[in-house]
Length: 130
Image 1 (cartoon, helix red, strand yellow):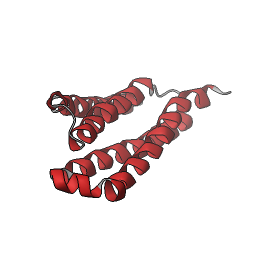
Image 2 (image 1 turned 90 degrees about the vertical axis):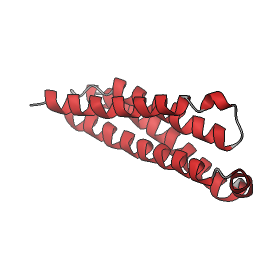
Image 3 (image 1 turned 120 degrees about the vertical axis):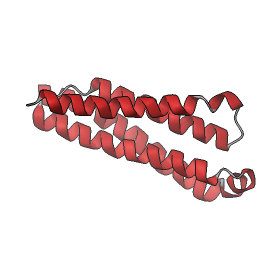
Image 4 (image 1 turned 135 degrees about the vertical axis):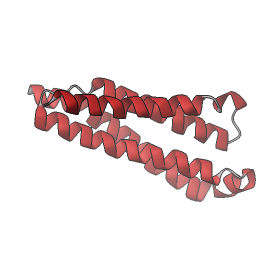
């Protein structure tokens, strides 16, 4: 295994798992849980969770491609930030939409911060490549 492929394995694995879950949970919200979400007025929350979930799964694919092409870009912290962001942001919204405990509400912005940290780290890595 080359050093470039060892750099892209984490983001690729995370992209695959998060992408699979994003499609599955999106479909559940659109079909199997549609009535429940509509009754609770939480359709928009579910859709927001699924959208951010899918966006960051795709972003992880781009991150893996960058790591493979470059071989020097450090992506572990970015990967973990986006995975944590997905779990905290999307996970808390999914939970709230299904009637989960109220303490999930304050978790959502922590996920947003994790997403933002990951994007900041992308910018830092790009800056360092000068």
